[in-house]
Length: 185
Image (cartoon, rainbow, N blue to C red; front, side, top):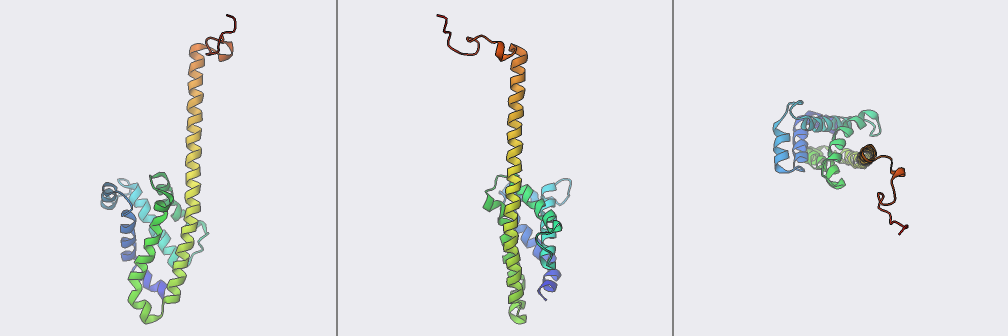
């Protein structure tokens, strides 16, 4: 019953959820992300919307949260937010407003039709999704740090290569050239 109700109101729920996600961005970013619907002009906004659409549909359908299908849509959003200047709580906070939006959408029907248990089960799935999102976020952040470390190492190697080309092999430098004190005095 709850799934049918939420499927019927999907477009409205998604728009409210998307608006709540956009509220986590600064005003300029929010304006850009909300005004651009073209996937090529606004790949970030399109990816976020597609991600929440896919997550929402799978939450409603009861898809296993650990499934690759679920992970694909979660990844679309978490990857974007992992590279942005968000704290972990800010990056993953996009999931919590969904609970509020759903409660508002089904408030009347929930009381009248006894949807409380179904609603509670759905909210537990959203909570579980938050935990999975944190794991995905940490994987993305670790990957970013690995990339940064590799870039620093590569930069250092290139610098040493330039020094060696210009001044020769450091093993052949005299003590004075290496900045060592001269013991021959």
